[in-house]
Amino acid sequence: MKKKLLSLILAGTMAFAMAACGSTSGSTSSDSSASSDSSTSSDASASSDSTASTDKTVGIAMPTKSLERWNRDGSYLQKQFESKGYKVELTYSDNKIDQQVKDIEGLIADKVDILVVAAIDGESLSQVLADAKDNNIPVISYDRLIMNTDAISYYVSFDNYTVGTLQGKYIVDTLDLDNAAGPFNIEFTGGDPADNNATYFFNGAMDVLKPYIDSGKLVVPSGQTTFEQCGTAQWDTSKAMSRMQNILGSYYSDGTQLDAALCSNDSTALGVTQAIESDYAGSNTVVITGQDGDEANLKNIVDGKQSMTVYKAVANEAVATLDLAVAILNGETPDESLISNSGWDFDCSYDTKSYDNGTGIIPSYLLVPTVVTKDNLDDALVTPGYYTKDSDGYLHPVG
Ligand code: BGC
Figure 1 (tube, rainbow, N blue to C red):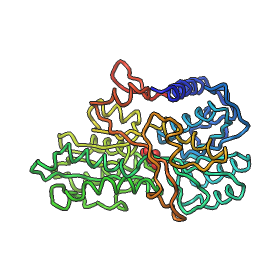
Figure 2 (cartoon, helix red, strand yellow):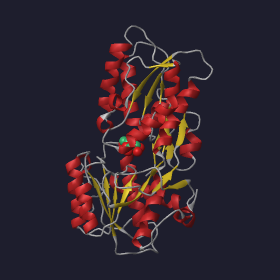
Figure 3 (cartoon, rainbow, N blue to C red):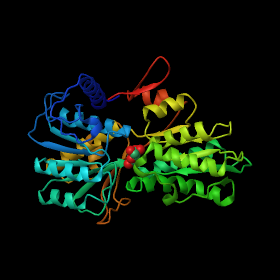
Figure 4 (cartoon, rainbow, N blue to C red):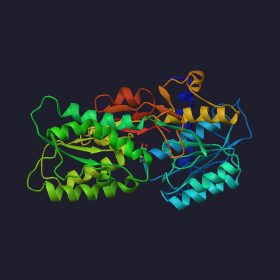
């Protein structure tokens, strides 16, 4: 593991230890679940690089603490920037759109030098980001593309379409759709319609699976195959569970076998898995996909209840965001050369074609997602230092 990531993970461990001790330093978080933690800090006490210093402040707006990955994103981003001597203001907005607008207004009023924003609703930030632009504050769209604003200069994410294709291909391979007689039954659970990523995930998976639906090898007993029919507001676990319980009650109570459940991420996979446990009469193992490597889902993978997750190393997404932000703050106009100049130990492509936010193409740095199953948990997650493994074989995120 390269030095940069190792120091990040160590710093992340420190951050969690500090949180456990109840530090409340500089908290401006508005996420109800975060009101007493140390997730927002304006000091650089945990810097892992004492040689760096700057008087600049980075404003980071995360969607919510209730979806597991954003806690890791916020923590990693904070530690990365602090390691270079930046001050950090980190907000979580409890998945409330108005709250995120207020939080970003607050960061602008605090005169942050750059904004890193993971939007709750990609369509709702045009006005507040116009204010950022008026105040000459550059904005990086983090993980989710922010739509209909010319205030954002760059997008950092994973290849979202590929996430969906990996999920679709996993189902093709596991059910052996090219050779087995079939037909097999499948249901789809998509993500939040307000999240621009959700359609990329869904379309990626559907592009792989649709030929098999068209040929009759795959059957969707509910008939729900469009993103509009399959979306899950706010990626909410209980909404995904209720919808799947309804589907199981309406289309599977006669003994029809469910072979696969395409779920766009882990929070929805958790709900679908719960629905199958409580309301599915069959005894076969249902192939269930996911995304993120959330702790509960990794436990389900170890226990054989979820088949795979698409892991996105958000520790690396934070490294890419740091180096991009530093270049912007230095007055540079980053392009493809940022990748080679930064010496990253992870793959990343520079994309100037795929992501149009309604005002034009947004140059994008896209990291590469990985398929994780029970068979490669150690190699993919433990060995690189992203997770530790306990004596029962369950994984726990670091940082
Ligand atoms: C992220 C996914 C995540 C989902 C819900 C998406 O924008 O890319 O990794 O599962 O939001 O938090």
